[in-house]
Length: 543
Image (cartoon, rainbow, N blue to C red; front, side, top):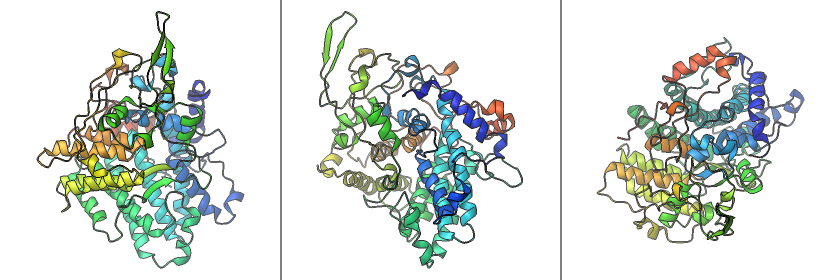
């Protein structure tokens, strides 16, 4: 993890203590380093907060402390790995860390820290500065607020949302149920502002100046509202089924529509100064490799997106074994992943497959393919009159078009291939039989559970490489079926090996620096503050 890993815990504590303590009462003392003078130039009072917010969702805001490594501990060494997408070949902490559930507090509190220190204060500023005179930009701020903060809530559970920056000093956290209802309310506000201000041509003309996620068109933001509402509605399908269906249909029936075409996606663009942090970690540091679960499914399916998602191994692996003999492992041209929780202490896996992502790759947050799979699940649940198979096939086809796959999507959709067994390149003890036993072919006579597994497995492939959403949906549904950790070193066995990790703890520093806030958060969680506690929408069943 570069040289930063040895000092990260101390740094996180120092920044937390200076920016997020005292029960969030100092929210105006944010850490973005923006001066009042900067805010007065060329709409900067509107543009700069929106820039920070949009760069802060897939975090790579340059706050003067160095870039990229915050993202590594915020997402890449938890959600990207727990989702089954990626692994880091370096044996940090002697080979025992998040991978084997020996959770590192200095890593796992960072998403909370940076979101509340950089992103949320700018959201508050943008809300305040646009509320009266810029209703369109106020609506965009509301959408960004939901997009940024649902990711945080889906990682930790309860968050300070409705009461952030409360003038009366009430900073009580929302339960996850409350915050989801607040998300829907904010989307309602955004939708109403968009729909009632379509004639504000001068303000609408400003959107391209501020837009980092979409194409600068108002209709795209309106579709984003509907598509994001669908995502959140499906998330709570088992926790609040009536609310879920109602919210889904509100999006489904709106005339603006949702994302449907392959080119329609939400992604942090690198055309305006943003650099993809995963690209730096991947290309320069060589600290992002394919996960064994991804290898199993891509190779087993003979998925034509394999070479678009990952690079094949460039060379065979040559090493000296414990007997002093030179061993050659034929890897060149193959797609190879690393099993989570293997606790290796060598660097042999350095040549395993790397993601396609570079510093110039846009950071994908939502795709049209995902929306088709949301519609497939909604149809499966009987919420709509659409056909689940039709939406499922549209989801796969849209993903193929997004990635410019040239091979036949129809042939792929008729395949009976299943996941492949994982064979470790160096340690036979890490070998494991394939867990994914469903194929791409839709089977109308199959049970709803099998159909859902097909939908979510293809959705998981389609939203790559966005690990936060992939991990959240995997926890909600149990799909795709990932390989369990080989070694489980969770404290006191709080994480079940087969059920797997369910959330991240609240930052440990809170218990010392703000015990009242910490107690309120744990009470809102409704269970012990550890990684084995299920979140509200994580009911453990699908029907």
